[in-house]
Image (cartoon, one colour):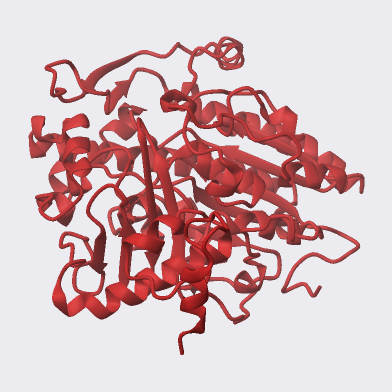
Length: 511
C-alpha cells in the first residue's frame, strides 16, 4: 500500500479510536452548529475526513457496539438489546465469533479499551483481548473502585449532584433523570478520569511502539453525552438556554405515525415539562459535549507529545444519536429518525488529505474493516463491514447509494428495518404503520407520506429494494415483507416447507 492508502508492510498503523455515547451530529461546529464549543473535534475533522452520511447500524448501545466488535450487522451477531432492558435476547456474543481486537492481538498489536464497554453482560473486554479496567453498565459507574482510587490519589471530592431535571410519568411518579448539576471540579469528573487513564495507557503503548515491539490499538469510550447530562458548573451553565433554538420537529403531532412514538413520548415525560426546560436540557447537553471535547484534546495532545500523531489513525464516532426533545422524545427508541441514526463520523489516516468531506452512505459497522486494513489484516471476516480507507485517502470507489439500518427493541421487542436513500427514507414497522419521508421537502421527518398516492412509485421501488437487500444479507425479516407488501415476484417457496413448489415455479416462469 502507498502512504496515501494505508500502512506499509514494514510499519503498521497505530489506531486511536475515540467514541462517545448517544451523540447528536448537530452538537459539533464541524457539522454546522455555530454555537458549538467543540474546537478539538472540529480541528480533527479539518485535518482528516468528515463523513456527512455516517449511520449507526442500530440506535441502541449494546447491539451497535457488538457490531463494531464483530463487523456483523445486529441480526447476524444476535446481541439485540441492552442488558438493562433485555426481554429475552442473547446477552453475550457466542463463543468463536470473530472480533477485531482478537485479530489485532494475533497480529502482534497491543490492544486496549478505556471506558464504556456495554457490549455484553458476562464477557468482559479482556475476553476479547483488550487491556484495561472493566467499567460495566450504561452510565458513569461513579462507585467503581478504580475511579474511587483515582479520586483518593488526587485528593478530589466524591460525586454529588443537585438541580435535577426530570418530568412526571403517566403513573404520576417521577420521570427518568435527564440532567443535573455536578458538584465536582473538572479534574474529578469521570470524563477527566477516563482521559487520564487513556493517556497513561498511551504512554505505555508508545514505549512498545518506539522499541519496534508492537503497534497499538487504543479505544477511549466516554459514557457521555448520554443522558442524564451530569456536568459541573462550568459546563452546566456554559450555554445560555435563551439562545438555544428548539428543534423544528418539536412540532410533532404523531399524526399518521406508529402509535408507539406517542407512547414513548409519554414515557419520557416530554409534555410534562415546559419548553424552557427543553431549552435548558439542550444547553446542558451541548455543555456536556464541550466538556468531552476538552478531554479528547488532552488525549490528542498526549499523542502529539509522544511523537505518534503522524503514525496513528484517529477515529471519532459514537454508538448512536439522541433525541433531546426532537419529535417530543428523549433518549432513543422505536423511531428511526435521523436524530438517532445519523451520527458524527471523523477519520484521519496517515497520509490522507485534510479537510475532506465525504457524502457516501457509511456506517459505524465499516470501522471494523477499516481498522483491520490499517493493521494489514484481511478484513473479510468482518462480513457486513467495508473499509473506509479508500474514502479517507481521497479515492472515489464505487459505493452503495443507500443504507439499511435495523432495530429489534428497547424496553420491549419492536422489529424495524430502514432504507435510506439520497432523498427518501422508508421504515417498515410490521405491527403498525409504515413510514416514508421525503427528506428533501421534509428534512425534519414530520409528514409520513407512505400512503400518499403520488408516492406510490417511490414506495413500491423502495419496498422492493429493501426486500432484495435483506434477502441478499440473509436477514429473515424479508419473509414478512414477502406476503405483506409490494415486493414484486418471489423466487422461493414462501412457506419454506418444500411441500409446494408451484407458487415460486409459476412466478419464475412468468415473462
